[in-house]
Length: 357
Image (cartoon, rainbow, N blue to C red):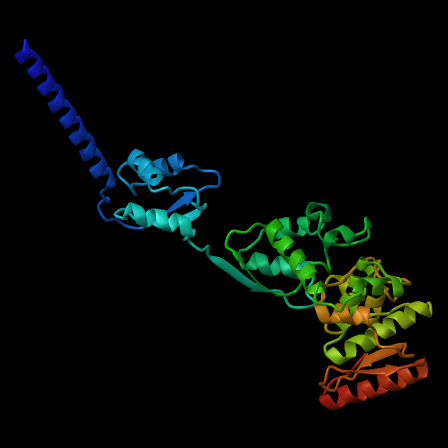
């Protein structure tokens, strides 16, 4: 009898030994790196647990066994700091190397697009340029530029519900050099530009929002004034002076008579306006309509916004370009002085070789 019991015990021992050996072999095989191969991108999405990550790595051929990887991670006390993202992985990586990579969040950096929006560009110019570069669908971008409600919680909340406005986000897309991930949507690009506007406003002097009350302006009208300054002025020192002229004319009940608003009404940047252009039927025509246009005529930079907030006090009511190559203006308090300045401007242009309007 004892021989039978001994035999059974020996069989059980040998079975257990074989089982342990088999498990050890499976574990050893699972821990062994795969045969080295080419790198590939593997995306770990938000919310994926260790088991899902292990299954993904096995499917992608990065590891031999999802089960062994899962138990190994648990044995090492890891897995709680794994970060989502797209990783560049290759078959043959050690398990500890993978764990360290996921803990660091050593993800593949996205390809970037870079573009510059010059100060004074319109929404249409921005859309056309980005579409030409292949970054946006032009029509979709323009449609979104008319939907400030899609960007609630941003400065777009200041846009009035005014059907006369051509593009409701005109003036709100801050001109700057941008770097964004490749494949970013039209909506995300616009949201980034709105965020940049807010960031730049943060650099203005303290109390700038109180200045709006002093000037009897809301934010939309501030950007409207700033956009006119942006399109009319090239020399920074003159921006506050032109801002003062705008406010002086509004206070005096005079039409602004700004060429840049007529160009916006025409929908083209003409080098030289004709007298018949000044009759264009548009709410943006400040020769024909009193007060400000219904909205900005371009997207102004921070220097023009600051000039609109802090105009230089003067009695000037008129200005005209010198046409002498300096891009500066002559300023005048009276119409007679303005007429004299126009004559000087024409003389400058004639000396340079061309007749002026």
